[in-house]
Image: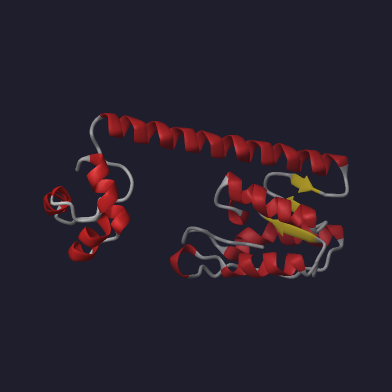
Length: 185
């Protein structure tokens, strides 16, 4: 599998080393070359992973990890899928060989999945910290509040009109009216 993310890189150049490796190992080669789909999709990778489930091959061979996954989490998920299907993964550029039939391969996969979880937790913690910092400065985080005449809702409620009736009259969900009245907006 080869995917080139920048225009200055050439697929033939990226494929050269994996092809040499495959020939050296005596493997039959089935190429998946990414032709960059719209909006960042990777149809060739999708096709490759579909064929993984069908067990159409024994090894996935790439030049480098960054062409196989865009994040540590995606790498971990893709490798776990290969592992479940008993398919070996080789990244020639980094000298990584994950064979699910060996202790070393299973150990490396476990190590990568642990690092992916650590990375995911760090990102989540940083996001929560950033949101809390922004909120402490009065910045609204999350969905924008639904715009409707809150003062009118309060006035109608003071007249004893039900929340459901107010919502119908104002054209918003009853939960929106209820939340606004409860929050004192």
